[in-house]
Length: 139
Image (cartoon, rainbow, N blue to C red):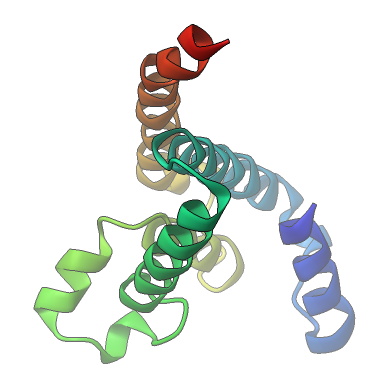
């Protein structure tokens, strides 16, 4: 919902052509949402308390946003920082959304971004399931 509201605002205020690119937007939004939700569940599973989750997630999310291109455009980064950024959801999501809205690329061009985001979702989901055993045993 948050991504959709953000893009609706971008369409209304900045003229981003959302309606013309709904299919690409839907692909990227579903893949990005799956990856970030799995990451959130993974973080909630490995942290021992809400306070720890809050502290760890703030540091990780701000770090990922910085090297992934959400705070600093990746074209302004060194090659090494761009490589590091490729380990974040932000970089893959931004690349996909950029293909959709900036380059107006076809949906088929989103294959690598969608694959990485969905693979991340699957891996983090599986790790969450495995690690959540300690919560199941505790009840």
